[in-house]
Image (tube, rainbow, N blue to C red; front, side):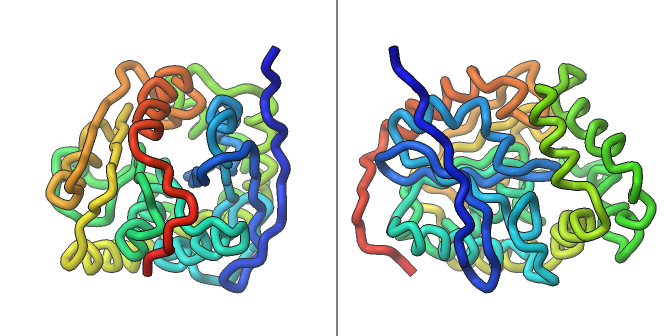
Length: 292
């Protein structure tokens, strides 16, 4: 009988913060970057299968979960530097990098700025700033909460004491009403309860204009040369793949039918059917010299 590799959480100093990082398995490094309103536990249903072949590294992003409530640095470039520092601390010169939702621009900018460190890139259900390709998705404007979260000091004040109801709405909507396991729901609610936890989460949205400029500048001078996989569901669909098409030299794109935004919890089996062969297809060059 095969037993799943244990998951340990470790506090790792990186780029001026202490990152809470879940680590499981052995093999080539595989970094998993969550979104909102998640923590590393958004990957709970797929860490086990992936850890059978890879050293899975799933941090709580800056300000999220059990990672430092930093006063600033919620732009994608700073958060990508956080991830590079985690890899350094763990002795990993290269990794496959997977991002969902808010983790998508962080993963993409890490790949654009440090191409020698990212063997493969997988991005899901997020957008890359204002790069062309998402016009249809954004025709009616961005999702309503982007504006709400962007107003300085508003959302964290209004939502204080009502965090559970708010987070539950995203979890239900993100799984097309199917919901998530109670233990994961409780972990997410706990991670986003309190003024500081909310401030940090919404600081990511307040930094999106800066992130957009960073991505546009990087995309103007750099292409993604590593194998890249874009996975869509509801509601982003193929908008991310359209943004990536001029940028990625080796792009594969899929949309999972009848799947909510939180692909990892809504359709984990279908996600693994795409992810595992993609990751296995490229040589896992551990020990390759880190790029810059």
